[in-house]
Image (cartoon, rainbow, N blue to C red; front, side, top):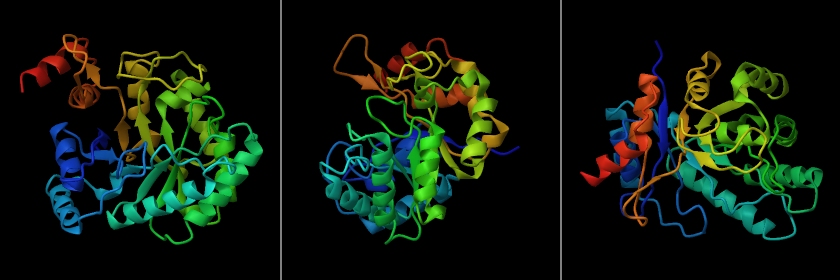
Amino acid sequence: MEELIIGSHVGYKKDTGLVGSVKEALGYGANTFMFYTGAPQNTNRSPIDKKQVEEAFSLMQENNINPNNVIVHAPYIINLANDIKNYDFAINFLKEEIKRVDTLGMKYLVLHPGSHVGIGIEKGISNIIFALNLALKESENVVICLETMAGKGSEIGSNFKELKQIIDGVEKKNQVMVCLDTCHINDAGYNEKDFDKILDEFDELIGLNKLACIHVNDSKNEVGAHKDRHANIGLGEIGFNTLLSVIYHPKLKGLPKILETPYISDLTDENKSYPPYKFEIEMIRNKEINKCLVNDVINYYKNL
C-alpha cells in the first residue's frame, strides 16, 4: 500500500533556512511540507546558504522525505493579472522566486493566478499568460502550480475553465500545473460531497495529469460563499469525512497533501497561538476525528 504523502505549511527562517523547515515538518510527523522562501507579504529575502541546503537534503533523505514532494509557495504580493499597477515588479519578483526555488533544489512553486482589479477576466487572463511566458523563459526545472481560488473580489482561477485558458496560453506547458485547494473550491461553488464529479470535470477540461498537489483545508463557509476562510480539519463546513474522501481518493494517490489550517488560539492568552498540524496529521492518518483537537493542541504546546 502506497504511503500517504502529507505535511503542512512550515516556517523558513533566515538563520536556519531549509534545515529549520525540515525539522519543523518532522516534528509534526510529516513526510512532506510547504514553505515560503521569505515573508509572503513583502520583498525581503535573505541569501540562500547552499551548505544549509545540502544539510537539509541529507536530513530529508534520512527521514524518507522526497524533495520532489516538497512545495514552495510564491508570495501573495505577486499579481500577474493586472497590468496597470506594479505589473513589471510582479513579473520580475516571480522570476527571482523561480531562481530561489531552483537554487533550493525544489521543483514546484504554487502561485495565486492573480486579481484583475476591474480590468476584466479576459484581460486579466491574457496578462497572466504573458507574465508566465516571460517568467518561465529562463527556467527549465521549476513548475508553476496555479492554485484554485475561492473567487473573492476579482480573483481569477475560481473555476477550472479559467485555469484551462491560462494553461492553454502558456508556451512551456510542461512547466505549468495546478494546486487544488479544498477550502477554495468549496468557497468557489464546488460541492466536495460529490468529489468524483469535480475530478471528472477537472480531468475533462485540464487533465488529472496536471494536478501537482492538494491544499487540504476545511472551510468556515458554505459552498459558493466566495470568501476564502480556512478552518481546522473537521471543524468547518466541508467536514472531516468529506475531506478524508478527498485525501484518500485513489485518483489523487501519490500527490502531496498540504495542510494550511489556522493556528489555534490560546484560550487564556490571546497573544499566543499554536500550530495544529501534528494533531491534524494524526487524525488523518488514523482516519478518526479528534473531538478535543483545540484543547489537545493548547495543552500539548503549553506543557512543552
